[in-house]
Image (cartoon, rainbow, N blue to C red; front, side, top):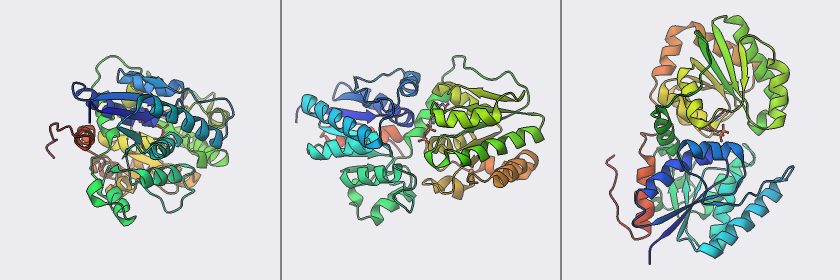
Length: 375
Ligand code: UDP
């Protein structure tokens, strides 16, 4: 084989954040291999904003998004776009991340062209293929095709082994999201923080299963908490999705201790997390990142494909139940011992060296030996 060419494929903000450390790490070895960052453009501004934090941008941008597209249209446009790139540039391996349509399509395009596919953040599972929708399908399908699996934890590894995947192709690496969050936290330039002396509660919600009524209950619960605790400020980082915004604005506008803000770029968001006393979120990434700073998270979902945090005690599932959110929020804001137990639980998601492990294994699969990471 000549000089290997690696595609790293992303489409959304979380993929950009979790793939960025892998791209940067592979590029440290650019004397032996070429790495091309491919974006489908499934998200637009927030994807580029996330990459910008790491000083990278897509080398290839398929810009597939059009207003009001169905999932099938996103899928077919992305598939066609990635297939064209594979044909034009002939990569030796394609890396995809997580559970998005982009991840699924990258795997499928690789499979059709007989190019090896490596799955970053492999092995997360819930019990039903349509919950979360369509992510559970996407990650299972990506796993079906992958010739290298990079589960973040032993739990995720076990899921893959149980499905009959070859253990020799599975490597527990830790979650690259932890690499990303630690790198972002180390950036020293000034970032935005609200001008408030008291305790900060951070809310993010965007997940499809919470659209509509559940989101309204979440917003009402957050409002009740901020009303009850006068030393708190509720900061709501609003996802660009208009459906989500409409509900959040209708419940939370015009309160002196609620700030509805545009989604901060990644490093500012990380600073905001670090400054928070409590986080309410249905985000997968936030669930993993907050424990790295010892910030308790109430997870606004009924089930999670990331049970490790719940088992370790760093996160608690409260769903979209108004009563449960208020009850647990109140407990954490008043009961020091309960707070301490969650804040001091050990983060199960990684040690910040996942990208190095992935670089080592990917390059080795292409016949290039590079230094291994001490575990
Ligand atoms: N994030 C961000 N700005 C925000 C909200 C989230 O940079 O306003 C980051 C967050 O730290 C995490 C990722 O975006 O790394 C999570 O993205 P999202 O919640 O959209 O997706 P999920 O993780 O649920 O797939």
